[in-house]
Length: 158
Image 1 (tube, one colour):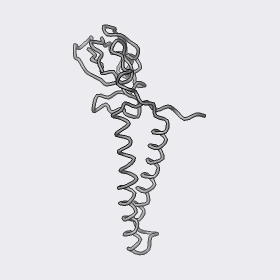
Image 2 (cartoon, rainbow, N blue to C red):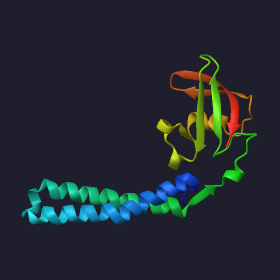
Image 3 (cartoon, rainbow, N blue to C red):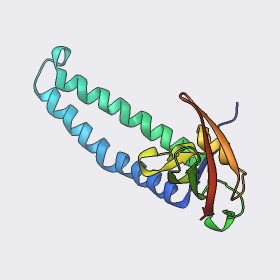
Image 4 (tube, rainbow, N blue to C red):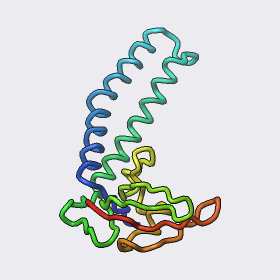
């Protein structure tokens, strides 16, 4: 089984690289120090400080492996590749909810960068999937748990 391609914008690549560097240089050292201090308390069999630090260490090492794999399989979306005619990864799309007449702006990103709180939605999310490849003016139906939302694509930019 081949590893899944990770699609990233230049900004997303930079964030993952910074997180990886922070985990390797800062967090590893911090947790190693916590473990050393906890061992200094004596009996580690009933030492919750030691247990917590070891769990954090395992999490950090797991995250480092995940990030390294993501970066190894990364495909960077260059801003020049982003088309303003059709929705693609890297597009900034303005949608209008047809029923409620509300507008919302989303940036379409790969799943690794998805952050709904920042209006960055994955190309694999229900809305992302529904609008990919569509043109300005298109109307799309998005299935959500509450039913179907109709959106009209108002604008596509990069």
